[in-house]
Length: 146
Image 1 (cartoon, rainbow, N blue to C red):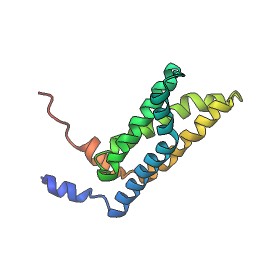
Image 2: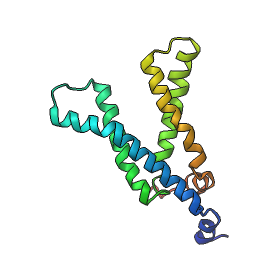
Image 3: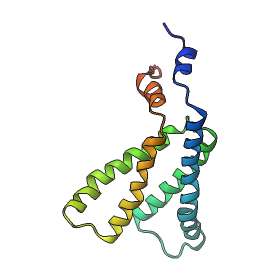
Protein backbone atom coordinates (compact mmCIF):
# COMPACT_ATOMS: atom_id res chain seq x y z
CA UNK A 1 0.00 0.00 0.00
CA UNK A 2 1.30 3.48 -0.93
CA UNK A 3 1.98 5.94 1.82
CA UNK A 4 0.54 9.45 1.73
CA UNK A 5 3.96 10.87 0.85
CA UNK A 6 4.26 8.55 -2.18
CA UNK A 7 0.79 9.53 -3.34
CA UNK A 8 1.50 13.24 -2.85
CA UNK A 9 4.78 12.90 -4.76
CA UNK A 10 2.99 11.15 -7.63
CA UNK A 11 0.52 14.06 -8.00
CA UNK A 12 2.96 16.90 -7.47
CA UNK A 13 2.14 20.03 -9.41
CA UNK A 14 4.94 21.58 -11.45
CA UNK A 15 6.32 24.99 -10.57
CA UNK A 16 5.21 26.20 -14.01
CA UNK A 17 1.60 25.15 -13.28
CA UNK A 18 1.76 26.87 -9.88
CA UNK A 19 2.85 30.08 -11.63
CA UNK A 20 0.02 29.69 -14.14
CA UNK A 21 -2.43 29.35 -11.26
CA UNK A 22 -0.97 32.41 -9.57
CA UNK A 23 -1.23 34.35 -12.83
CA UNK A 24 -4.91 33.40 -13.09
CA UNK A 25 -5.57 34.47 -9.50
CA UNK A 26 -3.72 37.73 -10.21
CA UNK A 27 -5.84 38.31 -13.33
CA UNK A 28 -8.96 37.85 -11.21
CA UNK A 29 -7.69 40.15 -8.45
CA UNK A 30 -6.65 42.91 -10.86
CA UNK A 31 -9.68 42.56 -13.14
CA UNK A 32 -12.22 42.64 -10.34
CA UNK A 33 -10.14 45.24 -8.51
CA UNK A 34 -10.49 47.57 -11.49
CA UNK A 35 -14.13 46.83 -12.26
CA UNK A 36 -15.83 45.76 -9.04
CA UNK A 37 -14.04 47.42 -6.13
CA UNK A 38 -14.72 51.02 -7.22
CA UNK A 39 -18.45 50.21 -7.47
CA UNK A 40 -18.54 48.61 -4.02
CA UNK A 41 -16.51 51.37 -2.37
CA UNK A 42 -18.59 54.05 -4.09
CA UNK A 43 -21.80 52.34 -2.98
CA UNK A 44 -20.51 52.12 0.59
CA UNK A 45 -19.42 55.78 0.73
CA UNK A 46 -22.37 57.40 -1.02
CA UNK A 47 -25.22 55.08 -0.08
CA UNK A 48 -27.54 57.34 -2.09
CA UNK A 49 -28.57 55.00 -4.86
CA UNK A 50 -29.23 51.60 -3.45
CA UNK A 51 -28.61 48.64 -5.71
CA UNK A 52 -31.33 46.36 -6.88
CA UNK A 53 -31.29 43.15 -4.83
CA UNK A 54 -29.49 40.95 -7.36
CA UNK A 55 -27.07 43.72 -8.39
CA UNK A 56 -26.01 44.02 -4.76
CA UNK A 57 -25.72 40.25 -4.36
CA UNK A 58 -23.58 39.92 -7.49
CA UNK A 59 -21.36 42.86 -6.54
CA UNK A 60 -20.73 41.47 -3.06
CA UNK A 61 -20.07 37.95 -4.36
CA UNK A 62 -17.59 39.20 -6.95
CA UNK A 63 -15.86 41.34 -4.35
CA UNK A 64 -15.57 38.35 -2.01
CA UNK A 65 -14.27 36.27 -4.93
CA UNK A 66 -11.53 38.85 -5.57
CA UNK A 67 -10.58 38.90 -1.89
CA UNK A 68 -10.34 35.10 -1.74
CA UNK A 69 -8.32 35.12 -4.97
CA UNK A 70 -5.66 37.12 -3.13
CA UNK A 71 -5.18 34.00 -0.99
CA UNK A 72 -4.72 32.04 -4.22
CA UNK A 73 -1.57 34.04 -4.94
CA UNK A 74 0.04 32.50 -1.88
CA UNK A 75 -1.83 29.17 -1.73
CA UNK A 76 -2.72 28.31 -5.34
CA UNK A 77 -3.54 24.64 -4.71
CA UNK A 78 -5.49 25.16 -1.51
CA UNK A 79 -7.68 27.73 -3.23
CA UNK A 80 -8.49 25.47 -6.21
CA UNK A 81 -12.11 24.99 -5.03
CA UNK A 82 -12.57 28.70 -5.71
CA UNK A 83 -11.57 28.21 -9.36
CA UNK A 84 -13.69 25.07 -9.62
CA UNK A 85 -16.69 27.02 -8.32
CA UNK A 86 -16.02 29.74 -10.91
CA UNK A 87 -15.76 27.18 -13.70
CA UNK A 88 -18.96 25.38 -12.68
CA UNK A 89 -21.26 28.36 -12.12
CA UNK A 90 -20.20 30.14 -15.29
CA UNK A 91 -20.53 26.96 -17.35
CA UNK A 92 -24.01 26.36 -15.95
CA UNK A 93 -25.06 29.94 -16.66
CA UNK A 94 -23.72 29.83 -20.21
CA UNK A 95 -25.48 26.52 -20.95
CA UNK A 96 -28.77 27.13 -19.12
CA UNK A 97 -29.28 30.87 -19.65
CA UNK A 98 -27.12 32.25 -22.47
CA UNK A 99 -27.18 29.39 -24.98
CA UNK A 100 -31.00 29.08 -25.20
CA UNK A 101 -31.36 32.86 -25.57
CA UNK A 102 -28.62 32.99 -28.20
CA UNK A 103 -30.03 30.04 -30.18
CA UNK A 104 -33.51 31.64 -30.12
CA UNK A 105 -32.06 34.98 -31.29
CA UNK A 106 -33.35 36.68 -28.12
CA UNK A 107 -30.12 37.76 -26.47
CA UNK A 108 -30.21 41.40 -25.40
CA UNK A 109 -27.21 43.67 -24.97
CA UNK A 110 -26.95 43.15 -21.20
CA UNK A 111 -27.08 39.35 -21.46
CA UNK A 112 -24.54 39.40 -24.28
CA UNK A 113 -22.15 41.47 -22.14
CA UNK A 114 -22.54 39.00 -19.28
CA UNK A 115 -22.00 36.07 -21.66
CA UNK A 116 -18.75 37.62 -22.92
CA UNK A 117 -17.59 38.14 -19.33
CA UNK A 118 -18.47 34.53 -18.48
CA UNK A 119 -16.69 33.22 -21.58
CA UNK A 120 -13.40 34.22 -19.93
CA UNK A 121 -13.88 30.98 -18.00
CA UNK A 122 -12.45 29.07 -20.99
CA UNK A 123 -9.00 29.86 -19.57
CA UNK A 124 -9.66 28.06 -16.28
CA UNK A 125 -9.72 24.40 -17.48
CA UNK A 126 -6.31 24.84 -19.09
CA UNK A 127 -4.75 26.13 -15.89
CA UNK A 128 -6.28 23.73 -13.36
CA UNK A 129 -4.03 20.74 -12.55
CA UNK A 130 -6.68 18.09 -13.19
CA UNK A 131 -4.62 15.11 -11.95
CA UNK A 132 -4.17 16.91 -8.66
CA UNK A 133 -7.90 17.71 -8.49
CA UNK A 134 -8.81 14.09 -9.21
CA UNK A 135 -6.33 12.77 -6.63
CA UNK A 136 -7.34 15.18 -3.87
CA UNK A 137 -11.05 15.71 -4.44
CA UNK A 138 -12.27 12.50 -6.07
CA UNK A 139 -9.93 9.63 -5.27
CA UNK A 140 -8.79 10.66 -1.78
CA UNK A 141 -10.81 9.43 1.18
CA UNK A 142 -13.08 12.03 2.69
CA UNK A 143 -12.91 13.27 6.24
CA UNK A 144 -14.58 11.21 8.96
CA UNK A 145 -18.28 11.81 9.45
CA UNK A 146 -18.04 11.13 13.19
